[in-house]
Every structure is written in C-alpha cells, then in structure tokens.
Amino acid sequence: MAYTLASHILLVPMGVALPFITLLAHYRGLRRDDAVALQLARRWSAVMAVQFAIGIVTGTVLTFEFGLLWPGMMGRWGDVFGLGFGVEAWAFFLEAVLIAIYLYGWRRLDPKVHFWLAVPLPFAALMGAFGIIAANSWMNTPQGFTLDAQGKPVHVTVQQAVFTPMFGPEYWHFVVAMFLTAGYVVAGVYAVGWLRGRRDRYHRLGFTIPFTVAAILSPVQLVVGDAIARAVFHRQPTKFAAMEIVWNTNTHVPEYIFGRLNAGGTISGGLRIPQLDSVLAGFKPSTQVTGLTATPEADRPTPTEATLIHWTFDIMVLLGTALLLLALWYAVVWLRKRDLPQSRWFFRCAGVAGAASLICVECGWITTEVGRQPWIVYQNMRVAQAVTSTRADSVWTMLGVILALYVVLFAAFITVLRKMHHRWRIADEGLARNRPVHPPEIVTPYGPREEAGMATGPSRPAAQDGDPHG
Image (cartoon, rainbow, N blue to C red; front, side, top):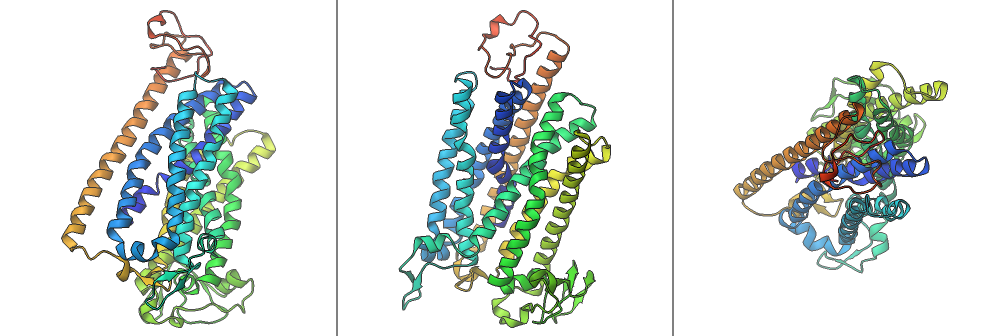
C-alpha cells in the first residue's frame, strides 16, 4: 500500500492542477488572440490525457488494495467514511468525460463554446481531491457516529463524518500543494529548454504561466501549512509530538532541525533552537507542548517512526522555504523590470523546483500517515486490526506484480511524453525554417482541418499546432 500510494501521488498534482493551468493558457489565447498560448493549451491537454490514463490504472490498483489489504477497516468503517470514496469515484468519471470533450473539441467546436465546456474540468478535479481528503481527514479525526455494545458504528451523521476538524486544514493544504507542485513541474520543463538556449516566446510563455501560478501560491502555502501544523497540535497532540520529537510534556520546548530520537527520549544530532517549538505552537515560549510519554507506549509512534516523520516534516518545510525564496526572487525581478530573471542560476533552480515539490508531497503524506501510527482510524482501530490476515507469501507476490506493473506503466508514460515532445520539436523546427511539415500544421488549434494529402507547399508562418495527425 505504501509503494502504491507513493507512486500514485506523483501523478496527482498534474491530475488536480494541470486542467486549471491549461485553461489559463487557453483563456489567454482566446482573450489576446495569442496562437502560442493556444498551442501550449493544446499540447498540455494532450499531456493531461496521457497522465489521466496512467492515473486510471494506479487509482484502480489502490481501489482493489483497500478491499483486499484492509478488510477490517472497510468492513467496520466503510459505512461511515465511504462517502468520500464515492464522491471521488463520481468526480473521476466526470473528469474523464470532460477531458474527452476537451480533447475532441479542438478544431471541431466553436472556440468559446469549447473553452466554456472545459471550465468545469478543474472543479471536477477539485471534487476528486475533496472525496479523498474527506476520507483521510476522517481517519485522522474520526467523528459522526456512535458505537453500539459490540463496538460497531451506528447512527452515522454524514455531514459530521465528511467535515471533520482536520478536513479544512488538510484539504486546503493539499490543494495548494497540488497546484504549486504542478506549476513548478510544468515550468521546470521550459526552464531546462531556456538553459539549452531556447529563448523563443513559446518557451517564455510556457515557463511564465505555470511558474506564476506556483510563485503566487508559495507564500499562501506557508500560511496554510502553518495552519495545519497548528491544527495537528490541537487535534492530534501525539502526532505533533512525534513530528517535533518531543519526549516529555513541557513548556519552553526547543525546536530540533533533523536529529534522531532515541528509545530513552534523548536526541542525537540535529540543530537545536531553544524555545522555538513552543513559540511556533502557541506564539509564546510558555506554550505547553504534549510529549510522547503522555500517551501509553502501545498507543504512540515508536522512536524510529517519530524520527522518520520528524525528518520528512523537516524536509518538507525546508524545501518549501527554498521554493518560497525562489518565488520571491521571481516576483522581485518581475515587479522591477517586468521581465524574467536573466540569471542562469535562477533557471537552474527553477528546473529542479518540480522535483523538490514532488519530494515535499511525498514527505507530507509520510508525515500524515506514519504520524498516526499505530492507529489506522485514530484512537478507534489499530493497523493490526484492520490489515488482512492473508499469508505473507501472497502479499509479497502481490507486491512483486505491482512493482512490475508500475515499472511498465511509468516507462510507457515517459516514452509517450518523449515521443510527443520529439514530434512537437520537429513541427516547431520546420516552422522556424519555413520548411514543409508533413502532415500539415494549421494556423491555430481552431483552424481548418486539412487532409494529409494536401501538404505539398510550405507551412504557413503562423502555424502553431504540433499534432502530426491533426
């Protein structure tokens, strides 16, 4: 399950946020009659479709795993928090239909009609995120039910089960992270092109649109991230103690950057900053922070688990801070010169910002899930009670099959993207040299649909689409 989630979540930022970024380029193209922006939107929509196809498989595997690996949890609690999965499934099919309409609409629909038919697409993606985070936040702060004499949940209140205390902070932290990550990932592709000498308007606009989205959201994420950390402090004090490797309940608690928690409560290594943890938790040094020893040993993360989530939390915060500084660099130069930074170091940093964002996403999920241990439903069901009793050799066989499947999937994903990139490069080079492009290119993605046999003369200078099949 950990491997499947870690792999699937790499696709989630593009699934949630790429539709919105694509529509930004699409809107700019229509509003300013900008053929380059329309070309970017057309190509990003193709990437969106390929990513969605891969996500179908990885998401389906997750669906099977919930039933096969966690029968105890699904059997007892499915009626309480299962609505979230239902909403996600409904949004998933709606998104599939909308993506199909969007892809079909290029060259076939009136431009404005085509754009407005795509407007619900980002909302469908956000609805899918709503369902998943509703289920996960319920696992962190379960409510909306009572237990009968046998310990089974009854009298379920759907509204309370969906809108738990952690839902708001977790949902907005997740959504902002997805948009920020997608922005940096897409911009990173064009940053690399810029470093390789491709300084045309196509690469400039392809970088500016997604990077601006990410840069705007970077300071927002700082505020939202602080809000969810404070919510964890109040709602899940044991998890917070593990995140900050706090052993004993106390005031004036220091902050450790990295470091390792030992079995006796001592901390090895790391950078110690006096009183900072209490200040961050409650804005003053006298704030009392609950330690791990306040919870019975069997009901709290082990020192090894605490060290793991402390490191993932610190990595997420440090990389997020670096991304914020990169966004500020971009903002200062843009406000002063109305131009992109010219430093190669800026574009080197922008080129790796997407990978850094994906690492942050992985670290955030590890912090969320491992920090809840040993509970799968916080203070209501342990992992050991929820997991399947299937023989270990069967589990290892299943893992082997999934490993092989995902290697093939991601290899296919990268291969398709590279072929698309190569095809678009050939089209762009042909246009730049005013040479024939076979099959023919068109003036804009909304131009006339030509037949391949008509491609006898040079392409028109304004041709912008890179799809050789029309």
